[in-house]
Image 1 (cartoon, rainbow, N blue to C red):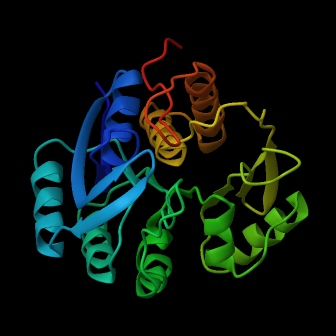
Image 2 (image 1 turned 135 degrees about the vertical axis):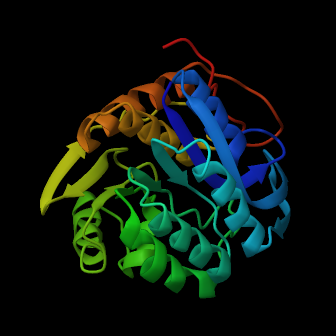
Length: 259
């Protein structure tokens, strides 16, 4: 059985964060593990509190996992402080971890900011450089690149700007565009578009967590980056089309739908 580690924050309502990651990993019939970076008090209507884990304790979680059940891939989500980012980067390098997917979580679906300004620099300089692939949405790509994104051409410019700081694979998710929902993979100076069908479903809580975890699962299975994205998007589309409707706000998708 392939083993996938999620390094992220906890969502007590179960729709995003490590809970979404574990459900996604289980749906892919793989063994899921977690290193919790923060507790959040949240639900489908918003984030009402965040309590960070001590950086040393995050490091201890990673030691326990990697010394016993070494992951075939790692997904990294919410990492809200420079100290936590530094300890994660240190452990990934110490254990020579491969197949690293970073979802640079900065803003929740409900609009709550989850990453402090002083952590963004640490994220770029310490952690992103270790990733096999990063998966920012448009607001996150704007923050990381400094380029306003309104069109597909802007997505390409932002990807090229990000590539000045990071030479791995960049997947900019196009769900925030008005005219399309296409995603862009920038890899080896090549633009690869993944057409996206805009699904009429207001319940999108945890979609970014789910996609990045699915990509990590597919990398663990031995697929290349392009195939991993394609399969992950198929899974995400099916989970959205299943029309789960839970909660009073932007509810979660159905991670357990039959593929």
